[in-house]
Length: 331
Ligand SMILES: Cc1cc2nc3c(=O)[nH]c(=O)nc-3n(C[C@H](O)[C@H](O)[C@H](O)COP(=O)(O)OP(=O)(O)OC[C@H]3O[C@@H](n4cnc5c(N)ncnc54)[C@H](O)[C@@H]3O)c2cc1C
Image (tube, rainbow, N blue to C red):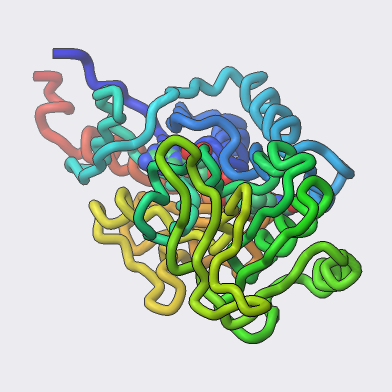
């Protein structure tokens, strides 16, 4: 049987929160491991980041490379495998990664982010990458000189996606189930207003994906006709309908979930409801502002809390050894 690795702090994730936690944790000189399969998280695929202080107009992937380089300088190891299971085992947490590596950690920082929401329509999965996409910033250039694309959603990502796509496709439909766009930042709404080739279809949902397995997606059926038609012929559909916190690992530990947001509940120290487990970034209800800077800030705070917990556990073990008669007699 392979050996169980021992670390002080295990960080789950490879996004902004995880790397910031890794940076701070390593600087506290505790034995730290970052574990996650996909480098960079959402920031790395978010296109140009214009609001990260000190790094104006930087590509998200390049920004995450800078995060990683800073952590690598401290020789913090990374395991390129996701957390599969976690359980409490005495005063440590036993974590098993997807590659079956077993790790005992005194403290764990969960920074596993959120999963993009799907429409749950037939053929959505099969046609992903063949007309269906969940990342307009990644895939918009594929629609250069195409006739039409559609974006589903009503938040910042949907509006940003529609505006970006308007630079490539001749017509872009923004399909939104409510009757008003209230969530996007005002500056984005202003840009949207000024973008003539984006048509906003309010109070409308996509009810069917049209196409074939050979051609992939070629159109969508709407819940409500647009200019007399309930079918739109499009080259690509971008689902930007929000995201749900990844709760598989938190649920294994029975962490308290915020009933209003569905996010892992944390206090101001980023402590969860289970001692020794901290959470940071988009996974948590620590802030409504889900951004790279807030994720990084939470990672830093979580690292301090995890460090303090490690110190307490080690001090407790030391005290226990000191108090043990066996230890005193040396037997
Ligand atoms: C299209 C788009 C554009 C954006 N633009 C901006 C912007 O301009 N400015 C800005 O500040 N923010 C922007 N954001 C938001 C920003 O990207 C997020 O707030 C930020 O990435 C959150 O960081 P995080 O570390 O909490 O989570 P994530 O970046 O989502 O990272 C989570 C990590 O956990 C990993 N993971 C998942 N499951 C497991 C598991 N079981 N075990 C281990 N690891 C796991 C994931 O693979 C990933 O590496 C944008 C987001 C999107 C989607």
